[in-house]
Image 1: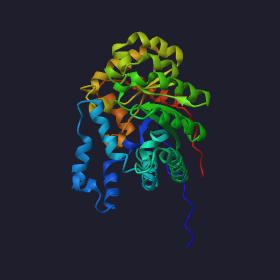
Image 2 (image 1 turned 90 degrees about the horizontal axis):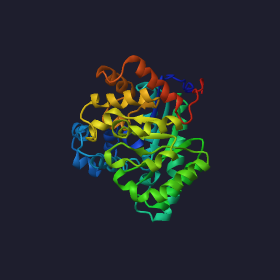
Image 3 (image 1 turned 180 degrees about the vertical axis):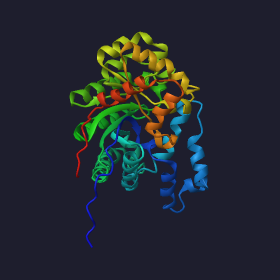
Image 4 (image 1 turned 180 degrees about the horizontal axis):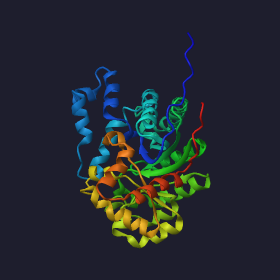
Length: 341
């Protein structure tokens, strides 16, 4: 009997501009995959799914401590596992997050085999991107949203790997639309002389640019701002560096604000602490997009981030609508998902 052709099931209403592959997958899905790998070391560390979920839900004291979670997830998301996770990510984004557009970011190097030598791993980065692209194309035949990839340079990686990340992003357009800088922001200062030319190279190739910047007091580097199309997080600008807002407006830059992340990293104590972030940006004419960052590990979907800010009186309905519009206006490659694929 012939299987009927898959039909689109959702149109979506939100745009997600800041979502990490390492943090996009729900803990129960990660744990279900681990159960298919008998003897996996994480199954000995986490005897139950509940203990696994509690590990990710626990607030951390610092950004560095928070980023350790990615080191636990990334080894799970290697080549053979990527189709499994991408398919479930796209399905959840369409059915439960109600997304029309998503930019998925990751560092290809961290999905390569660490047993290979450096040259082999550099070559395997291409395979990582190609597998994610093929898996996404297959999933999107049924769940029609627009998915674009953002490749992340990383503050803990050598210049050669970060340069290869930019070159690979340029070679895989339009599926890859931008490059990012991620990792512990306390390391940024020493890498500015090498990373600024890489952002310039990205733009020369027609790529968009963003960076995890002004998220914490240690990540405030104004020298990077002129090389960015958007600012990843950026909350310290309206909180402590308000003089920079006029330049953000002049350059048409948008902040990618991820509310729950700041509570999980210890950067802020309450959602209400974001009230000045939104008010000062909106008053200055600086666009703000609401994002989840690591929505799966937080177990917080994008529509819930909007609702939380509304209930906490951080935003009113008009301000919330402005942020919703900003997400689509500042998406790097937004276009309407086609019907009937």
